[in-house]
Image (cartoon, rainbow, N blue to C red; front, top):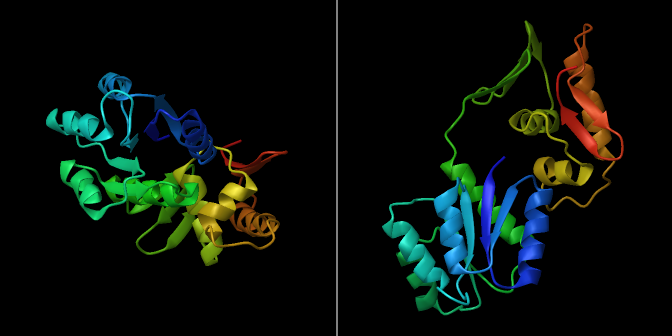
Amino acid sequence: MQTVLVVDDDPRMLAMVRRGLAFEGYRVLEAPCGQDALQVLRNGEVDLVVLDVMLPDLSGLEVLRKFRAAGEDTPVVLLTARDKPHQQVEGLEVGADDYITKPFSFEVLLARIRLILRKRSPDRSELRFSDVLIDLQRHQVRRGDRNLHLTPLEFKLLQTLMENPERVFSKPMLLDRVWGMEYFGDANVVEVVVSGLRQKLEEGGDSRLIHTIRGAGYILRED
């Protein structure tokens, strides 16, 4: 689980971003001011910082300067109502990885966070869980000594679950991850694709790996 620190003195903004990120499976830490943010950053592992520029003590730019001066390269996304080009350039020159102007949609923030973290993650050529192997480069899947012939949606669904084993995914979360945020069709399509994927994984009497959590969603785990 990746950790995101959200720094903002607006309780409503903090609550909105916290709920959205927690729903997407991130661990969320909060700080209402610059000094608290620096203390959190000194005390623990943070994978990304969402940092408001206008804070009651230190400005977000001052926090970022101190953070970078300490040699830290954790990615930082700045939030601000200042939309002048030179103000955006200033934030990027200080060391921000991205810059979002207020007001903004949570979907835009989420997309920027995912992109930055994906670029920071080491490239992987394969995923393993139990006796299932996904070769990401060849787009192939094996279970034991069997080759599985999956549709593109089944492949992406299995990849999502194998990247997050033992985690429950609701239908809306899977629609977002697998079908994309632009999909507005019937959510029951998730059941259809899960059913097809299960049949291929369990062919020949192999044990069930994708389990239904009633009222919550689906989880990848061994019996």
